[in-house]
Image 1 (tube, rainbow, N blue to C red):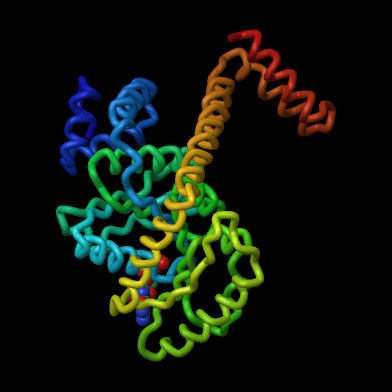
Image 2 (image 1 turned 90 degrees about the horizontal axis):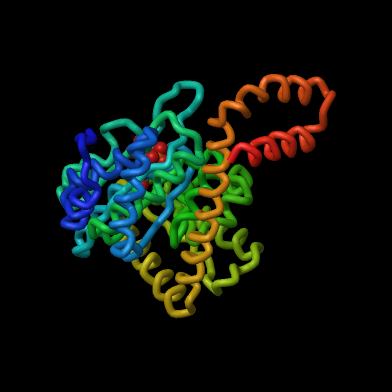
Length: 330
Ligand code: GDP
């Protein structure tokens, strides 16, 4: 709930002192689409910005059922055991079919969500990917200002949200499951190329042998991909999110990745590039939104769209005409 009137400076203080209620409220403010809330959210972020940047930002993807939420729970509990505080954010553009959130179910990460030192936030529903990505980036900044050390951003590995998440984190983990060894073919090559580490989950019981074999196959397949410019060689690990075996090795890999990229300056460069790209995304989104909200443009749109659809006007020419008209109005 957003209290009214809201004082962004006071809310920022609440966030900085690590109050979970203040963090939740700040994220609710960020998720609001009301223009007055947006202004307050920007004031809040301005207050918080000097205190951001301190967390390890980790993205996680994998097909539904790969064990992501089980993994995040085990990983989050391991992070807590190291004396560090995890926050979990989800990027889950609402499915147009159900209108609901795939990741929103309350029974996920039960132990982690009960721990007062951890923070879990499901994805805002009813948004476009662009909207969700913007809010998740901002929610990440709020969590950092609140003192969380590790921020896990989870995405369902079924669409374009992986790129959006890879563009906001320091390290991107791909969670796979053991099988016939040909799974890499089922996962879009583009997503594999985003991965900084591949984790073969469910390496337990009857699946343990298959997991080890799958890990070898993946490692071989990954060698075929060029090493990224940072010099980091993408490792393939096995673990069981269920028995929590191998989770410590994932945590060590996360730390090794930070040390390697930190020492070479690649981490700073990656974040700087992400910030620049984010700014341009904001420019596009803001311009597009103002254009769509402009009443004179809105009056022209149906006819423009009709003539373009009918092939009477080239889309490029129509776009330039709309933008020229819009520039005349601002
Ligand atoms: P998500 O859809 O990727 O978030 O997957 P979930 O975490 O919900 O897990 C899907 C199913 O796989 C559940 O039934 C889990 O209990 C199971 N699962 C998750 N991790 C493991 C694991 O390490 N070993 C085994 N055997 N099952 C697992």
